[in-house]
Image 1 (cartoon, rainbow, N blue to C red):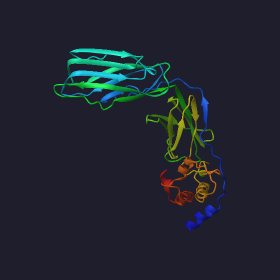
Image 2 (spheres, helix red, strand yellow):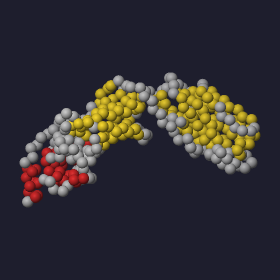
Image 3 (tube, protein in one colour):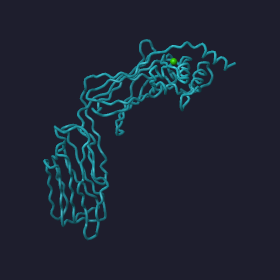
Image 4 (cartoon, helix red, strand yellow):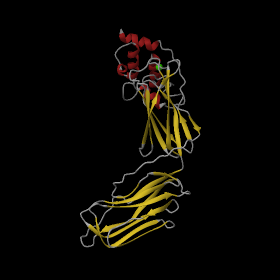
Length: 344
Ligand SMILES: [Ca+2]
C-alpha cells in the first residue's frame, strides 16, 4: 500500500519547469588590498619570500646551505635573473675568514659572491639573501630566479654542497581585485543543519585559500536567507574556485577566471534535494530527477542538452550517481517515511 501511495504521488505531480539562474558575473570598481604569501625558508637551495609580487614591490631571494659537520674553503654563489623584470636593491652576503668579493649587475641580471681560502664553519648552515624589486615595467606572469652557481666545498675533505632547489619562480601580478557577492537560499522550512551562516572558501591555482564566514539573515517574508561575502585580495589574471557551504544545502563550487576588474558572483544555494529550488523538498523535485533519468528536458539538463552540475549534485541525495533511488528518497520524505533527509 505504501508503494502505491508513493506511485500515486508521482502520478499526481504537476510538472512545473522552474526557471533557474546561474551566478551572475558583473564588473564593479576594484577596492585596494594587498596580498602577501611567504614562501618556505627551510629550502636547501634557492627560495623567495614571496610567490607573487606587484610591480615596484620588494622581496628577498634567499639561498640556504643546510648545516654540515664541515668547513668550506670555497664559497661561490651566483644568482641569475631577467634584468627586464627584476632589479637587486641590496646584496650584502658575508662569509667568515679568507677573502671574499660580492657584486651585482642589474643590466646583466646577476648577483655574485665569491670566497676563496676561507675556513667557513658550516655547522649552522649558511644563508645569503638578496633584496629584489619587481621593476615598474615588469611584464606580468611567472619569472625565474636561478642559482646558476652554488659551489660550497672543501678540496681537502672532498665535501661539496648539492643544492636541491636551483630555481624559484616569482609571479608578477598586475593588480589586486575583489570577488564578492550574495549567498542566498530559499527555505520554506529550515534544514536541521542550518546554523545561520555560510562558509565561503576561495582557492587559487596553486592551492592558496582564503575563507570567510557569512551571516545569513532572513528576509522579511522569512523564506529567503541571504548574506554577503567579499574577498578583497584576489589577483587579476588568476583562476579561482569558490566553494560555498550552508548547513543542509548542497555544497556549491564555481570556477572563476579573473581579468582586470573586480567581479560580483552570487551563489544561490539549494537545500539538498530541492532540485527545482522552490524552497521545499517535494514530489516536484522527484519529477525533475525522473525526467532527467529518462532523457527529458528538466532543470538538471535543459533543452540545449546543457547539464546544470550544481542541480545534478542537489538531486544526488543518496550518494553516487543520480538514480531512481534519489527520487525514491524524496518521495519517502514527502510521505513521511524514514529517508536520508532525516539527518539533513
Ligand atoms: Ca523543491
